[in-house]
Length: 316
Ligand code: MTE
Image (cartoon, rainbow, N blue to C red; front, side, top):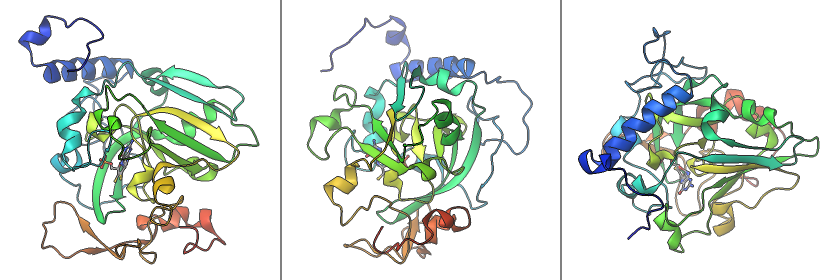
């Protein structure tokens, strides 16, 4: 039994709690973000019917077919809620994504601790339709909504000595029951080199399919780094820290041979236990031909320059 931190409003007894909370949250957040529901849409605009459906579509969109919403929000990796693909959708209702504070600190001139909606309000959200390639060998095409991470990072004025940016997920076994188990060292931590973090493809996502992020997708705030394996795209972030040395990251720490720090999608560098040359696009059926995996997940034109001169077989 969870311990309630505040009394339950009677409304919850009439309206099922998830419905009630979902509806209230959507309206509150739409208001907080200054999204006007009745605005005429600029085309092309974010797909879906939710409060974020009208935001403009940003650059880099792939024109591949979107993966069905039921798969994007129903087939997840989020070990804080269990290791099965349907565990996050079934169990993540215990996460309370608002109110939510985010700390941005470390090697910066102007550290910040701020409510997630205040962080986003002046930002100008956009839709980014990106491929997502999981290290396990499956992929999706996802209509994220968010803002370039660089815009948030510039606000705190990184010092010249900053070289990396570290991201940390909430650590609260009460909200994230999977953290009571020893499957990973908690909290989940990821990191990028500063130039990767500042790259215009790198997104801080707050929504998907025109709605706020469902809890199972990493509400209220998650990273999306489309040219890297999905485990770099850390969910439910509470802290962003600039560092001078390379941070220790969760999967790299657990199994460094299997999960490199860079984790760039690369069909030529196999996982020790399976080939990375091909991938299964979710929704295409178990018997559909597997697709060839693309270098940098198809974003080589944008990001290959970040790795010029590096031996990607060694620094994977
Ligand atoms: N972030 C946290 N905190 N915990 C996780 O278990 N899983 C990662 C990543 N971010 C994970 C996480 C992995 S392996 C993938 S493939 C993506 O989230 C999946 O994102 P999605 O469920 O939104 O598709």
